[in-house]
Amino acid sequence: MQETQKRDIKSMTLSQLEAELQAAGEKNFRAKQLYQWMHVKLARGFEEMTNLSKEFREKCGEVYDYTSLATVQVQESAIDGTRKYLFRLSDGNLVESVWMKYHHGNSVCISSQVGCRMGCRFCASTLDGLERNLLPSEMLDQIYAIQLDTGERVSNVVVMGTGEPLDNYENLLVFIRLLTDENGLHISQRNVTVSTCGLVPEIRRLAEEKLQITLALSLHAATDEKRRALMPIADRYSIQELMEACRYYFECTGRRITFEYSLVGGVNDTDQDAEKLSALAGPLNCHVNLIPVNPIKERDFVQSEASRIRTFQNNLEKNKIHVTIRREMGRDIDGACGQLRRRTMHAMEAENSLQDCGGSKTC
Ligand code: SAH
Image (cartoon, rainbow, N blue to C red):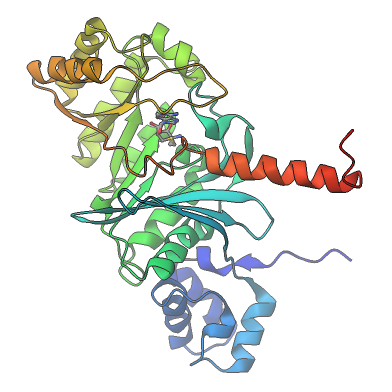
């Protein structure tokens, strides 16, 4: 007989949980108690919910699945205290998250998928393709585990780790609603940033949700031709379509968009590139965030010279574009986005195959 799958309780909104428990004949306040244990006290399992009867906790355990993460590795930067976490999900998959300390608060960068299918040429997270989407609870768990580990409140969340968040749209939306819910961790929507490689229909759909989150668009090139050389998604949507979607997002939400632009030496960092980028960002009143590309060993992209980066920034500023250069946090532990997961995954595979053949060096 096939076991019916248990439902994921940590991905339920408070009103869903209230309806569920009411239908099951439970007292009204039970839902709120459970919700607080999950999303405020950050319990790692039903067994920690000590003010609920053992009988009720056991019943919950029979009906619901309670996701949790195991910490596989934590790397801490000696330079700025940035921490990179590698977590194992209940099905054995690995995800990466990063904790960064700023003057204005603590920021966590989370993954939205296991792997990615967008294929950006400079990105390590996409090299092995997409394994699966993360559940809303599994996105929350990354933040909860880090808050528990550091003992410090997380004030900002950026969805900029592995995965394309708008390729996991429904789960992302539930995640944002739970994260910003006043009955949960209650992080302000304005302190949540979602970064996308540019899925036009989903940007428009997100605009209509009228959230106050920040949308960051990974532009990386100012002409379709150059963008296509870096990002396969550019074959599907033109820059013009993207700019129209960005304008729509601003009209619907009043929120200014951020353009992310990874500078790749000799590829997208000329004076002409800066002029073209200014022409795109100016009318939209966008903020531009320049990122010196983080070279990955699988590709031969190089960072632009420091002087070129400064000139590029000056060119934008001359055109009255609001521009920042991304501070490179945790330079000493870094490795580009997705590399820690990839390295560990491949090391584990190598170990397994050695074990499979009795450790023989000839295989
Ligand atoms: N899929 C989303 C979010 C994840 S990537 C997106 O594309 O926006 C987060 C940001 O890091 C994106 O701007 C991405 O293009 C950039 N990025 C990925 N690998 C990089 C690298 N090796 N060097 C510099 N930026 C990189």
